[in-house]
Image (cartoon, rainbow, N blue to C red; front, side):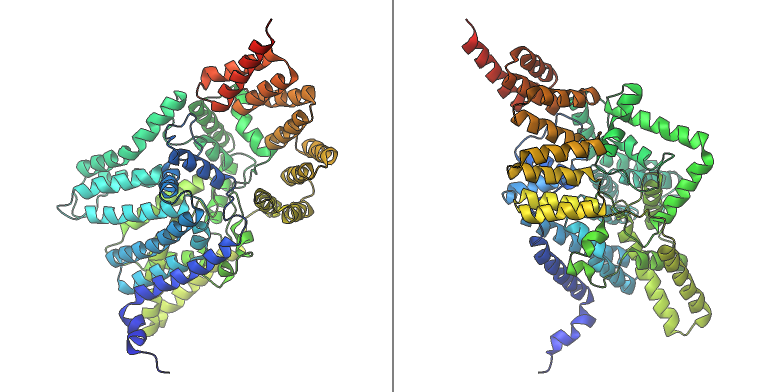
Length: 600
């Protein structure tokens, strides 16, 4: 049967539509697989924190009481979807896959502005099919939304530099501010932009371009200022967007660092969180940031050779072909999803072709794109490198990669072997360096298997959960989080002595693991071993004196033991700083009722 003429002409007349349709097909196939995954409706770690904050927002709790670990931009986006679609995860994934296709279209628009139609189409194809973009679109993480905001900001900036469009600077600033409260690293690009406007303004602006710089800064402040104010309201402390910025800087810049976020969510992570308190008695978030910054500066000053070597290592990591884990290992999940296992482009060809495109870029050089790449790359190298942290580079690398591939095709078509040969050698050298230079530390997938077990457990699929935990322990016999998961399953199955023994072994191997100690203390409380439970909670409070949940369980355990004085004291202590804590208010009411009933 002959193919109808309109379909035959589709690739030639509407190539962008064909690219977007192919991207849609990939996302639909991935969505079908994702629905079968236990992670579909059981977010964990960062995704769980985003989800919890979003559900608080959707319930009308917009004023947070503690400075959050993440900016509120993505939780607000999730909250809007939860409000419109009754908390549906399907709506979230559909929205993020739609944003992924929008990002491919926005890259095409930028490609038409800075290069030509052919380069724009190649760049859009990269963005529509890059396997890491699909992977992050299938997670409750801020990555996809951040890319959309960054690309819209780049379009607005390109629009603003043309005569007679001053309000575009304000729009660009607002978009950059929204991106900042979603993922603060964009502030590095904002700083680079301000420097560019003051010292190297694009034509037809004249140096120094004070007015555009001020309007841009004002626009960025509009979304950021309310977040900063709410942080002040929550803890009376000046934190611009989110906490742990200083800790993230220290994570990638200390004598033991390897350039990746290698501290895992076990006792090692809890020790890192406690470091300002144990070393200097510091608990305020802004002081914690300054404490970690001082450690980084001390490291750079006292060991400059090691510090510079570490920065060089991180630069090599930035261009590494392997996707580096942050929370989870993307390549672990790529092996589990057939769609992601397809021969889709990855970061390595994007980087090689992108660098070639920069070298082959003609006048006028797209300085806006270069400033974006340079600022983001510098920010990532100065902190830590991972697949998620370097994702903002992908859209602009795709633009340069599209130009690079078109230039290669032109040289081949013109049989310009003198220029084609060096270009091919350059491509091969960059690709080889990305694959051959593997400074990424080897690690097991015990963490991924353990979190897979958690996801199965939340869905009450205990048998696959136990298998996943045991797979984790096969890879890393002393992994305390997997042991904790097995203990929880044993407890649910009525094997309480076995559960407690497993938790004791986990604490012997990892005594700083806060979740494991909480679990152990809670099971002791449920068994009526109140003195032992209180001793475990006191260990937690010695390290985390401001830990509200530990104070709550001390109060609850004391109440169950009959020690009403201790229970009341703990409850009132928390309510002095957290007067809206519903669980503690309810417990205090029970204590007061019991006191009235037992009073003579």
